Length: 272
Image 1: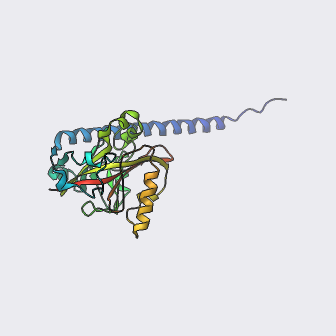
Image 2: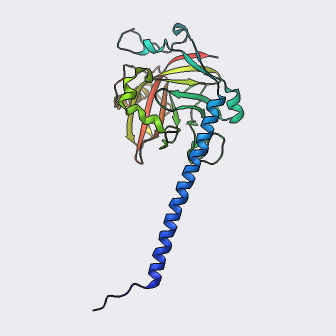
Image 3: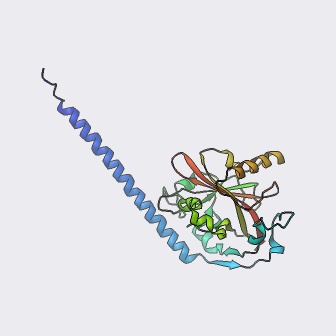
């Protein structure tokens, strides 16, 4: 019995579909590289133009929510002696009026201006220059106020494979990062104050919304939140946290199903 010959038109359809798929993949790769190139150019320009300086700030005048007991196993007392960083926002505001802060995370490439708008989706697809770019930018949750600070203040960015934006936040799971205790603090500068935050929890978790809750109706619900996020940590930090603390949360993608989450508490703040 003779095999039925596949009609020529079937092969033609297969060929057309294959060409379309490969072309689409090629265009995506091309756009991805262009987005990376544009983002890298902006980062380089910002590094050249942004003036960042260290500011000595006496601990006794700037410490926030100090623990009741000065015990040696609480690194708070060491970190409040560190200088703050100050950023000149004049040029940044000229470049992007949405700029609300500048974030530096030791042991990573995170050293960027932070923007905010009334839509959390905008800076997922727009760069610092507000041009369309799937690399996005680092942004503060629209529900937060950088000046008054919520109980939980959330900053997002894409976890880019080239380690830009929050792509290098994954470094926190490397032994090299963890072994250097200087990495356990974040610097945040704003137009009105400079601040230092102590990390107390880092973890990976399937996508959810609980950890990005920004405010709590009761002290009990906030305490439950703090207990939960601290217990999730994959690394041990010599830090305590309570309901008088203000929290900074960094969130990015780890893979298609999980997020990398970092939590830190405000320990030092100086008005400008």
